[in-house]
Length: 200
Image (cartoon, rainbow, N blue to C red; front, side, top):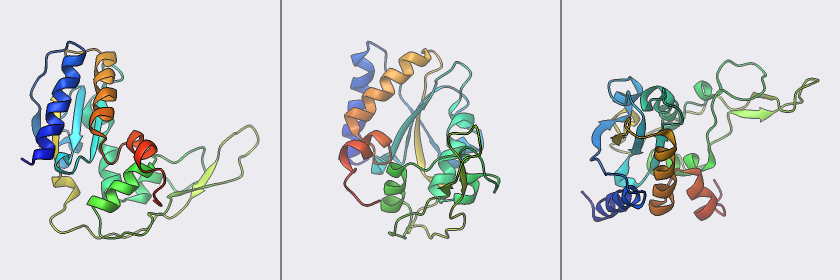
């Protein structure tokens, strides 16, 4: 385990302590195992590709949310740069099925794929019909990529904290503090604070 990861785990533990919440050790899984619901069938926190400080997130906004059903099924599409699946059915609509935030695009280009050009948008703004404020149509839905040596999105390591015993509010509070403590590469907060001047 690298010195940087050890330091980030120490900071994460401190975030629990700052709320006077007992720390529990995370278990190790992969993006694929969680997306297929083999792991992550609970609320809590997760840390994708921690060796690169890639992304830190939560699933716990409600008592019925789970990491496997609420988040990872979308994250895997971003890691694969599957723009067609992110957009959803190829029709005009009020919004794409899923977004691909700029922080994610930056981190995917840096750590996951070989292509360094801007990842194109999978949606384009369209003229909204009467009564609608926002309307989109398909953008680039076919963008082939190759993965960096040794990288398979499904096999990326994920550290997972099972926090079913905490309230959604407690989980969210820890997540917010962790992000501002370790600044993961793909998180939108990191992009806004650290990378907003980078051409993504």
